[in-house]
Image 1 (tube, rainbow, N blue to C red):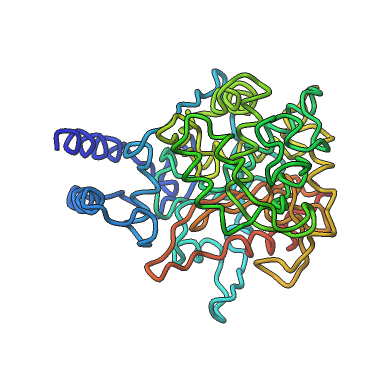
Image 2 (image 1 turned 90 degrees about the vertical axis):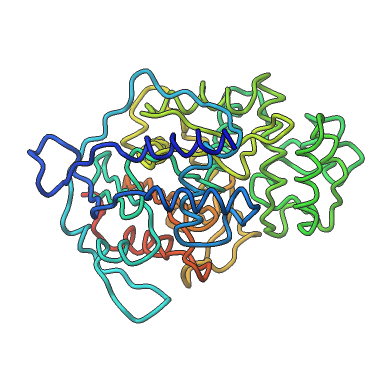
Length: 414
C-alpha cells in the first residue's frame, strides 16, 4: 500500500507542469494544439489505481481507463531505460492551415471533418505530421507533449531496424535460416526458416501457439529453448500470420549477435543517434527480457524523430541510421504476401515488421488501440500518432487518414 501512495504522488506531480496556449503565446513557444487538455484529476488517478490493484483489465477497457494505463505504464510495471541523446535533434515548426483543415473521410460514418476537428472527436491522444523535416501539424487532444505513451507493436520496427543495422555491418545475413544462428532451433519448427520470412511475419509457425510460446519464453531463463517448441504448419514465405513470437525471436537474434541486451543495442545504435529528446522505456518481463513485441513508452516527438530517419530530410548524413539497402528491402514488396489493405481498397504487402507496404513505396506500422507511424520517402513525410480504444473497443481511423493525407497532393515535392 505504501508503494501505491508513492506512485500516486508521482503521477500527480508529473501532471502539474505549466502549459502554454499556442494561440496566445508570444511566438517563441511550441506551436502545437493542446485543446485545453488538463490531465487526470486526483480522483481519477485514485479510481484508476484502485481498479488496477483489484486486478481490473489494463488495456481492454477503452476510454480514460486504458489511456491512463497507456500513459503511465512505466510507473506501474518494470521497464528497461533507454538513454536519450546528448544532443537532441531540433524540430523546426512550420504549421500549415491547409493540413490542419484537411477534410478527412472515415468508414465509421458519412461525416467529413477537418483533421483538427477529427482528432478532437475520435480517441486520438496525439498526432504529429512532419514534411521536409519541419512540423506542419502537431496536436495533443488527450495527452501532454512530454507524456510517455506506450507504442505497443509500433516498437516492432525498432527490432527490424536493429536487424538491418547488423545486416549493414555484415554481421547478419537475412537469407540464412534462423537456426544458422541458434543451434537450439535445429530440429524445431524454425529449422530452415529464413530470417527475411520472420521479418515479414510469414514464418510458417502455427499462429494459434503464439500466446503460449510467448508466455513460456517469458518465464524461462533461456527463452530461445522455449521457442524451440514451436511447430511449423506451412512453408515459410507463403502466408502472412501476425505473431509476436516472430518479433521475440528477432529480438533474441539482435542480442545474440551484438552481445548486448536489446535495449542497450537500441540505445547505442538508434535512440541516441536519432537525437531523442527524452529517454525511452522498454517493457521488461520477469526474466529480464525486453518485451519488444509489447512495446516501449516514448514521447510522440521522439517517435517522429525515429520516423525521420527513414526520410530524405533525416538521411542527409554520410552514414544514415537507415541505409539505402534497408529502405530497398522494405519497399521490395513480397507479392506472395500481397493482400487487401486493412484500411482501404488498396493492395498491400508486409516486410521488415512493417504492416502495410504500398506499391508507391509508402509504408506503415500500427500498434494496439491506435498507435501508428506512416512513412513516405518519396514525399519526405512522417505521420506519427498515439491513441486509445473508445469504450466500445473501437480505435480511431488515423491509419486510413494518413494514407489519404499522403495521397492528397498536399505533400508532393516540387
